[in-house]
Amino acid sequence: MMTNIQAPYKEECYICGSTKIEFYKKIKGFSLLKCKKCNLKWVVNITEKEIIEFYDQNYFYSNSKMGYADYLADEKNHRRNAKSILHSVNKIKDLTKLKVLDVGCAMGFLLDEARRFKACDVYGVEVSNYAYAYAKSSLEIDVIHGELDSSHFASEFFDVVFLIGTIEHLLSPKKTLAIINRVLKSDGLLVITTIDTSGLFRLYSIKPPEHLFYFNHNNIVILLTKLGFKIIKIKPYFVSYYLHDLFHRLSEFFSFSFLEFVSGVIKRKMPNFYVKIPTNEMILIVKKIEEVEDL
Ligand SMILES: [Zn+2]
Image (cartoon, rainbow, N blue to C red; front, side, top):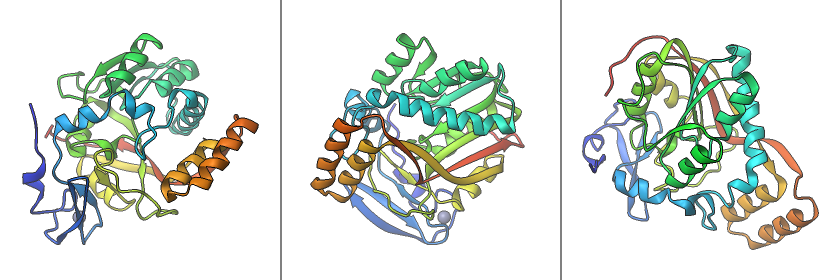
């Protein structure tokens, strides 16, 4: 069934409920609003069908400004970042043999690392058919194809849920957070990374239909608190990049082809050189403190 989210959110801010909202931008036919009170920017006219069509195989091998240049070629790096996140979480909660869910798990590298690291019992949800098929067949991970749905898991099933670079892609973050709240055990953790529009680096592209919500470290806390979570940790997210990939991304962001040339040289001369740098993203580790009803 197609859902159009335009209607209910036109009158007020998706997070804080303020009516002080203004038109922000129209890109590729997608309209964004901005809340003058909490600064949330979000897309108001996209359908579920448009989202699903967007995440085909091209998303993971894209020369456009969206998606990934070559997701699988960067596998080592994705795994390195996944391990870093798992170690951070493990300091707060011993992950040994816990049940974990990754919503928007892509090809399943984080889940595979969680299995290797602490023998976690792993589950994934992934909207891209291509990524889902890879995680399922190549890594033999229990992945559901589609969006997280209320019918998928029993209440209080998981110890930890991950939303890594996923929440900004969702049609309805509130709905997904409410489901996550329900499927988490009473002291379960939720780990989120997303762009912080008021963070250390305020450079980011507005790019629907890929990114639909543009949070900052204040309004995301309001959202999470409303959905029954308490913030344990929130900080800038450091990410490892291959140096050639970093130059490739900069080249795309600034539309400056010389940087792409540099990227090519680095890729030939030192393909495995990587740097860990602060990004325009934040990482949040939050705890479920109360039950909320599924929306
Ligand atoms: Zn607001």
